Image (cartoon, rainbow, N blue to C red; front, side, top):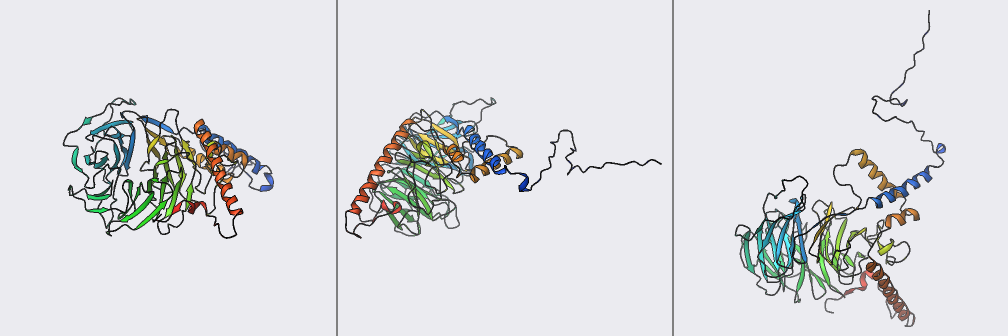
Length: 498
């Protein structure tokens, strides 16, 4: 009688593979005593993850050519994720098809610069306003023109001025150049056919009736309004920015304006947070963006810094967690929307302020930009918009080009496999966990900016430090209590009668 001993292995615990192509399962003892160098290895992985994020950072997707003059206006809608509209200083309006990177339609009718444009929430029509005091409504083609050649991108454009595309045109009742237009969103209390035009006053029209008479007219002591924007959640509410340095809130349900906010310098643009309808942010001539809560306009929620010139356009992402700004300093920056409760952030050139140009990718206070985009030949950015799905950023500048950027510079393009997606999430978690370590912070915050931006940031730091020294000396040589030190979030605010 022979005794035979059989060896039995569990495929899930002993490391054997079910198939030849499977990876070997390596058992691991989770006892911390068996891994004395675990924290050091994790820190090394975090440094490597930060390096990989900067290595793969290639934000520019493409530059769309075809405009014959500076691009002043951009607009997109969630109804058409693959298309957006741009308006130029030569009076031309173009409809762009993002997948093929080409213009599918060109609308000509304005005799002066197009200062504002917007697409209806349904995606069927577009409205443009111009310095020639006219408002024009255009029919947008439902099917985009595609190129038959696989992978071939051309700039061939179907130009049209026929009556089929030009639905409606009229002159503003207020007279003067028109600087902005925006469409109301569809809610139970308001139809999506309403749109507002900003010029010498605010005129609200009903696009469904196609009448030249405005439904409502609003004004509050300002000669020219340069921007108008509807609230995404409360469609009856909209805000305007004017040349009198005021941001005014209006409600269509009332015959008078609601609130007025006045600052020391002019605001060029306003945008509402789509997820928090009571919050809005305005881009100012003093190079900063200010976040406000409409329920309390006595102080700003946060002061967003980093630009070295006036902010010309601003737009929130669909999630409401960040917004994009386009500036006269030829850069596009992305900021976190939520500001911290702390006071003044460190200066742009101070240690730990985010490397060159003061960018801070790991700054959670919202005072510093998460990223900065620029190219060698890009002109002054006059318009900037987030894509309706939040994955791309579109900018228009005075070098006649429209550029498409990735919302996250190192995000891969195309199909991402689950294993790769998990690896990307793990690397981001590592960088976020060790963001206070100097070696990780320096790499993650490192940004290359033009030499002009760097020199202007240094000059701006000298000016801000000089102003602070002056305030401190005035307070030191005054009677106690006579000089009240104002915080940065209230220093720029003025009374409405000032």
